[in-house]
Amino acid sequence: MKIRHLFFILVLFSTATSSANDFQEGLDAIHGTNYNKALEKLRPLAAQGHAAAQYNLGVMHEWGDGVPQNNLLAIKWYRRAAENFHKDAQNNLGAMYSKGEGVEQNFIKALKWFVISGENGSEEGRKNIDMVEKRMTSEQITLARKLAREWMRQHFKK
Image (cartoon, rainbow, N blue to C red; front, side, top):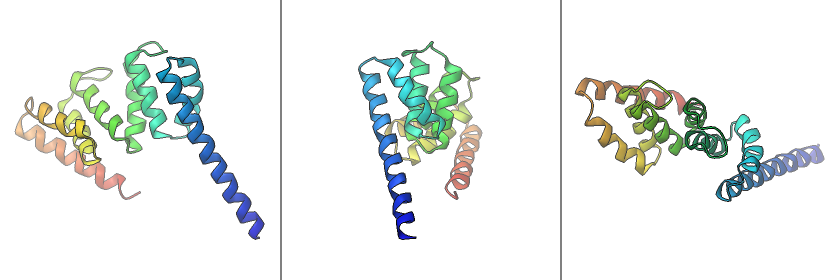
């Protein structure tokens, strides 16, 4: 019985180490502009729910780094990473809504994601709150903040 537990722990540790190595290799490949290798390393991790890999795929699609620029795919990956509590993805998702890139411009959704990002520790998210609120009515601000609170309440129960 103890050997079985030890084997399970070793498998988990080697999987986590492998994922961390693959992620670092993917980041290094992005920084070295070896985008094919970056995609090879990041896509499987992103499909498994790795928030930072999802975020980086979003960035690659938003800017067209190694892939055709595609705001719809950027939104897809940012949304997945945002749902996995990645503060920069939450901020970038808010920015996409604020600018209407890949989605219809929506300041309520933008503010919702900026508030969530700011609450998650993003300084950029906090700065963007002030910027987008200047373009909104008080009713829109109230609704966006309510939606952010509801999202956080639902997702922090998990």
